[in-house]
Structures are given as C-alpha cells and as structure tokens.
Length: 357
Image 1: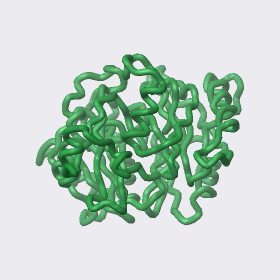
Image 2 (image 1 turned 180 degrees about the vertical axis):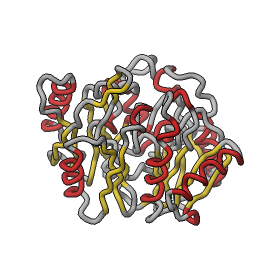
Image 3 (image 1 turned 90 degrees about the horizontal axis):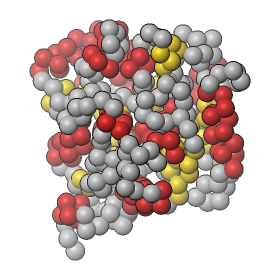
Image 4 (image 1 turned 60 degrees about the vertical axis):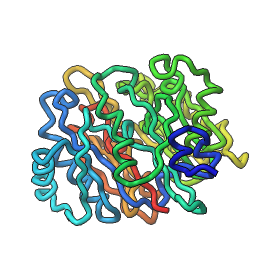
C-alpha cells in the first residue's frame, strides 16, 4: 500500500476511506491556531481597539492548551508579544510561526485537522481552497497557503480536495453529522460547477462524516453569505444552541425562525431528534450606518473554557447563562466583542482548533 503522505499528495485515497474524521470542537484539543490581526482594512479606523479583547481571548484559552499564532515577521511578533504581556498571558503556552497572512480569519483560511486514533499516522490535515468568501476581499494568496505551511511545520499529510470551503460554514457533532447552510455552500461564488449532491460527497470524503444537515440563511450583516457559526452550534453530540430573534420587526426574526423550524424536523445520524436550546440575539449592533453580524453563537469551545462574544447589551448575561448551562464542566467567559465585530466576525471566526489524539 502507498505511504499516506503519497496518498494525500496524489489524491489516490480520501481521508474518510482511510478512517479519518473531523472531531467535534468540544472534544479534547492540543492547541488553538490564530493569525495575528494586522489588516487595517478589516477594522477601518478601529484596529487598535481589538488587541486588548483579542489578547484576553488568548489568555483564557491558553489556560488549558497551547496557542499557535501566525505572524509575518519579527516586528509583528514583537508587537503581538507586547499586547500578550500586557494582558498577562502565560507566554510558555504561546508559539509563533512566521507564516504571513492577508487577514486574521483563521477559521476560514486555516487547516482542517482530522484524526484516526487507530492509524499509525494519527493526524492529517485538509487544505481546502480559500477565495475570501467569494472573492470579496482580494488578495487572499497568502491565506490560501497557510494550511500547507502548517502541514509542513507539523510533518503531517496534507489532502487537497480542490473545492472552496471555509471552516466557519460547517459544524460537527463528532459522530458523523455535519451541519451547514444553503446560503453559503450553495452560493455560486464558491463552487459554481458543483451541485448539492456533489458538495455533500466532498464533505463526506474530506471531513469523514456520513450525514449532512442543511439550514437556510445566515444572519443580516454576515459578509460570508451565511456561516453556520453565527447561527447554530453543536454543544454535545445531540444538542445544538441556535440563535433566535424575538423581535418580529427585526430583519433576523423570520430567517432565524425558519432555521429553527428546520432544526425541529431534523434527525441525527442515529435517527434521533436534535435537542435544541434557543439563544437570544443581541440588539442590533450598528457602526458607521452598517449592521454588524453580532451573535452570541460565535463562541469558541476550548479545553477548559468557552469564550463568548458580548456586546454591552442587556441580553449578554442571559446568553452567558444559557451557554453555561450547556457546558457545566467548562468556565464560560464573556469577552467584549463590540470592537472586534466591526471586522464582521468574532472569536470563532478568528480561530481554528487542533484536536488531541
């Protein structure tokens, strides 16, 4: 049989055929990967305000695991270190990599790590194509190379499906079910040559899943065309939290209600119904006459904590309480994301987990 590095390189076998799968985010993690924010155009006039909450995010996650950070050069590393030291981060948990990026959204340009605990090579990486959400924000050439650089650094096989895909558009329960949205994955600005069935086959082959569930639309203000990680998240193998908007006059009300109705009819890979926990939406966050995609659902599940974006809103505490109820063994921490969300994403969009095996 061919060596697995050769199989990955030639595409002679898929990760699923070799027994690899993408674990749920609530499974044990070895590390979190980030790309240090540096693109002024992503936070026009505000980028200096994001480093304090971003560093707090790193501080909380690093209490229970390593954090890998992609930077362009020594100058960016020094700049990052100054903010991390100010936040009181334990720098022994931090590792920098000189992998230059165009932007900070590591959830979408970072690698997908798959594992097979029974295999000799227990971890592999999938490098999807990245086109900055349908060519909205060129250039993206450096971002598109990040998974390859990480695979080389870690010395693990790198599979390349050749399909455009972003990590924020998929959710996993770790048992074979993947949840995604039609608004994003079926958008003609991603893979116009592929239909739903063909896309599902890629998802099964390269994420190691066998059951695909689809919601409809994403929230207003989301420039990704409807990523699932702003709407509905698995918190255990059979439970999701899903964003709902009670105010019928709000433009998110109808589309989130439609998604909720769909979730109620869905069945998991074992035929069971989903347990559904409703999560409120914050009041509309508007900056510079633009509605931003503020959502409590964009939390990051770390080994010891869950980091939840908050928005100086009256529903912040209610959201934290609901999420705390879903994670009794983790410390749920709210971090102000009012400035970060001006970049049109929050903590989950900025990060990518590397599973333990």
